Amino acid sequence: MKTLSVETKDISLEALIEMAANDTIIITQDSKPLFAVVPVDPDDLQTWQLGENPKFLELMQRSWERLHAEGAVPLAEARRRLLEAAG
Image (cartoon, rainbow, N blue to C red; front, side, top):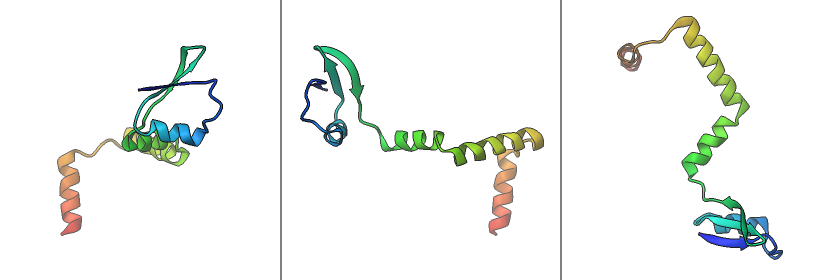
């Protein structure tokens, strides 16, 4: 973990992001913690991006509505259908 004062004017946002790629950066003001910039796992980033994607959210909503309207297919039946379609 590294600490960086907000009063430091000579660091760019890009440099801060690069620093945080491997380590948590604590930004302080008047020697008190203000916020943290943390490394993000690529899988977590993808999850966040999906959760913010309007097209994905719309697809999930339609799927949810279809599930409630038509019901679910048991896993065994889904496997059977997939094997039947493949073979």
